[in-house]
Image 1 (cartoon, rainbow over the protein chains, first blue to last red):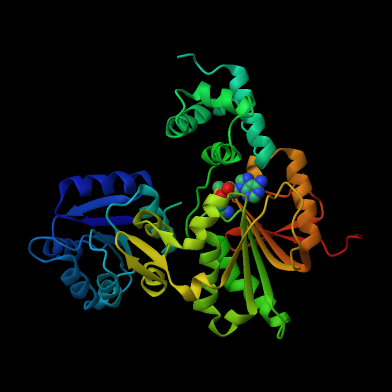
Image 2 (tube, rainbow over the protein chains, first blue to last red):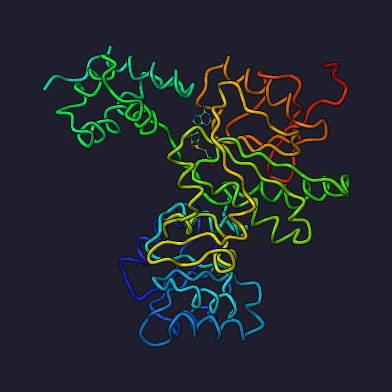
Length: 123
Length: 277
Ligand SMILES: C[S@@+](CC[C@H](N)C(=O)[O-])C[C@H]1O[C@@H](n2cnc3c(N)ncnc32)[C@H](O)[C@@H]1O
């Protein structure tokens, strides 16, 4: 299982990397939505993307919309990991095609339990 | 300040066992120390030893005794904890029970429900997947702790709690934000009846049950208590009923009347049909 972490904060990427490596994922990183899209176009090995909402350049919401408009990525699982915590925003992200949503701050268990819900925890 | 001595630890262990049947192993002394020291300060004692001395001298209030037991009890829980038992409910157990009982109710008991995430998860699942049946499903949830039950009845959760195990779509449907917290909506809250009950003592009348969730509580009890509780479960579970235990708990070697049944990635227990009771 390969995961792409998209967040402009290096500290956040490194925290998520630590959690996901520990759970057995192969981990890749990008700093914004555009870089993440480029990454997906270059490689087809990614199964899951964890994406922040607020990022300079292409934000997480625009990224969701872009990815969901490309049929090749139909199978790709997308999870928002963001400090945005209004119900309207969560609903918007889900409507735009996010499979799950985690609010910052989060615990390690929270991330892993959400992935378990999606049925994509490596054994 | 004197260090807490072995007999003090024994006294607390005994107090906790008498109130809740929870057995604290000797290697849990650190837990007594780290959890009771703040309580001692808060209650105005100079030290943990002073608190224990007051308990021993019987000069402590019963509220304080409860708080001591409370502080040592683990209330760890989360929405849809372990996920698979809830999948089993959705895909197998509820459809089967509802098909059998086309007119009567399905009664579910969450024993040791902690702050309510478990019964509310079941309520949301019913509402989502069996919407026309929600008036036929009765959910009773009990716990020993009055304080934790008060929280459960309130139905108010922190962000950390709603982040855990709860599908985001259910958060948007069944919770309202209230400042930094999240309140479960009345339609889900109303589906659960909360009551106080000590599993290790005699139980108030409980209607015949179709499903029992008794998860992550037997592990804290000694062998005799586990057996006694399972025997009582036998008395309230319908012959067609299902028992769910925590992922590290089992009826094996405790009660031969139960038969483990694999359901997807979880295991539940049914009463053996051929037994003579
Ligand atoms: C670890 S929690 C389990 C919560 C939930 N069932 C789950 O699996 O997530 C254990 C709960 O058992 C309660 N408890 C402890 N002793 C009990 C007793 N003798 N009778 C009933 N409940 C008890 C505690 O108050 C606590 O809320």
